[in-house]
Amino acid sequence: MLPLHLIKQLNEANIPFEKVEKMLSLGKIMKVKNLTKLVEHNKVCDKIYVVLQGGFVSRFIDKELEIEKTINFFFRDFHPFMTCVDSFFSGTKTQCELRAISNAEVIEFKKQDIEATIFQDLQLFRVYHTQVTTALQEINDFEMKIIAYSSERLYHYLITECPIVIQKVPAKYIAEFMGISSEWLSKLKHRI
Image (tube, rainbow, N blue to C red; front, side, top):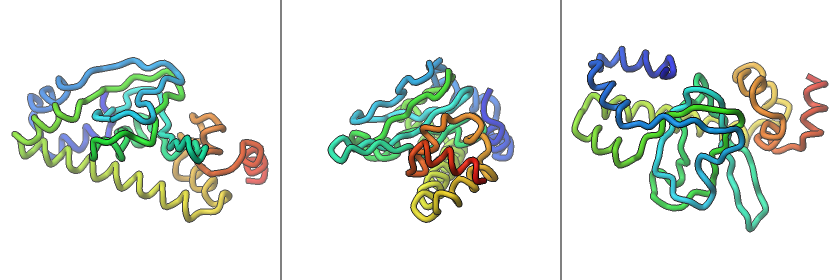
């Protein structure tokens, strides 16, 4: 089943059922096991995924500087569209990975299939453009919070605005996202 906000958006755009079916037919449903890397670091990512079940983290990796940092979270009803943005739009190798944090199910869409379809249909192009713009805004919003918020304020933001992250993401990835150790996260949880 598609995320509710996507179904709502398709209805609001008056996209005929046959066009929705056509777009969905381009996708491939995949089952993904916990801890599987859907996209690996240093590979070209030319796919977009829609999360149907389970969860994922996006992690930035720089082997030279020995940095591995969680930068985003993806669930069916929280950032359901995922890709490695640095690679998807440029065609270069990504500095990120997409990793399952539970058993999951996604729809995989190839960039070339999406583009061939949306460039022939203005309605579908508009829906695609809206989804991409929204996803990029969400990514930017998260990045600004990582940069600007103190760890206490960031954790409070996650609790109040993103409870699914606190409920479903292992503490290791939340601590990475916040830029603190797991021990410091544990102390922060007790304090708040």
